[in-house]
View (spheres, rainbow, N blue to C red):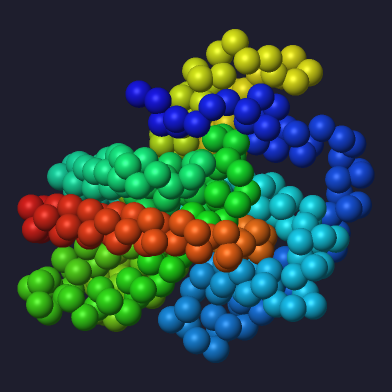
Length: 357
């Protein structure tokens, strides 16, 4: 089944191959202003998170990137001298952060929840992904936005969008718009879902599983589930890790679909896409390494900190590419898609939790 319906765009369709065509040193030298701005944005986002712990650092990074891109006197720099570095952060740093994300995937802990829960999570991911993708196509959202939004809602928010965009060759503006929508909805979940625990009759552990199966970003899951106590938080994180584990097969499926559609298209310099994207292989290798138990806790903690910082810098770069006036042109359709996807993931996951607790 073809996941992407837009035409292949030749050299552009190979993601960052076009960006990487020139010498690495030239690309790096022109990227320092943007990378410095991304580092500063991460620092501010970290301070915001420390002051308001309910606001995840990744969410703050996206919002700050969007804000700077529209701030008079700064937006010219963001869209000019800093653009190469910000785009580099959105591509390369995102890939490294996703590899490190695999070190947080405790496969042994995930399997202890039982196969019924594993099946429930897989059903939630499949229903959300294909339902959102279908609705987005029906609404006529441009470019790869339906694919990217479906990925973000079904797996792990902005991180999943970044991963899929690396193999789909998506336009930066499509990626930024999708990240903005998924981040907004995930942030709203922090306030809305705790209010529904009592009306829906969910115990604390059941509420945690519902949050883990329905909220997008890992940080947003933690912020939402902790309102019901440590028991709910533990269940939420484990169920969320199951969804994160499905990131690799989903990205591989998208890569296979793109590769099949590019059959016969001339690739630059005779290059061919790898059977499995390198960063996906790295993600799986990191998860396997974590499962061996050879890494000490301090190493895992440092890796988690590095992952948070890298993903925050990448999301700041993606947020800075958001063009709100252009986004407003499809704002109504995007809002309908966001609401529809939210209802699907919340409804299917709620039913799944009731069947498995």
